[in-house]
Image (cartoon, rainbow, N blue to C red):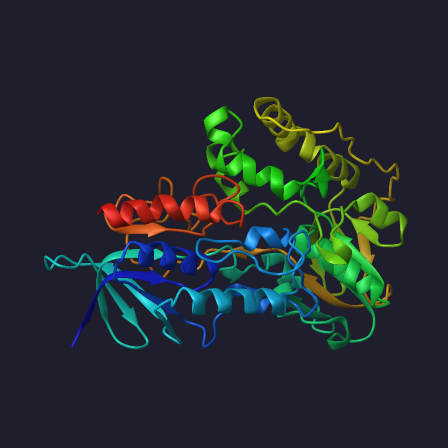
Length: 415
């Protein structure tokens, strides 16, 4: 027998749970299918000392506000997992755990538009919402193939703690939020760290009296109304730029800025982008200075003007704020013998790629991301939520998720 449900949400991470609450509030029958055996989404794959980069108040979602004592603090991984599990319980989310969706196709039997092949058997639905977050499939660049077998190679998705690594130094490839936070953690653990730097921007922890995520929340929710919207995908230099790293920032130690120049002055070896491995010899592209200047200018070029324009449109006191600048130029490194440098481990903090190949429908672009408008595809009844760049740069972030989910939920309820 083929089971039928009106609405299926694929994925019971925080995006799927928000969608579930909105549908339950409208008394719409639905089910959430979660491939994992436990709730907590992709947060369960983060390392042991992981902390949220956005403040705790950003975890307030429909039907479940943050209830802790530190709204401006930054939850640890296990606290965050527990938060979302409690949310699922409070909203009585109809989650089915351990159900892997392996195929999605369209049908036309009058009552249903889609058929899902799952590990629990086939399922038909009139509406499908894919709650696919940013942590799809760990991405390790092809250059990794040249690394000699004597060096441990692992993606940050598989890293848990410093003492689980072999003795010796660590080369981190990628300087987004994960890369810079792991660099600090490993240094604190007594490791010598080399960081291969990509084109990742830096943002201040606080600007004009507020955490930077307060500003991002305002721009995501009311920015379009007053002419200060967050950057959208059509303004990026190329479609591939949707996979660019998140700006450098940390929630550790009460939350703080990240400055690669300070890290270099403190003893972390910085290099340019990794070009190739020849066994245990790594080669890096020149241009580290230019990359650091890009990081320094990122907030001014992309975000600061929007924040200032927003401040001019609304009531409130927004004191002047200057961005801290640190003057240090690290030496350029274009080649490094990992063995001679005492480096035993390479950790790829190179992000993730979409894992939507189970969707056998013409809704994905050449990069594996959905073709859509505000989360809705051209196929009636098929939508996405929690996926990067559905609306703008806030779509896969806690500051933009609820905004996107409300739009999709309204369309589902109306349809």
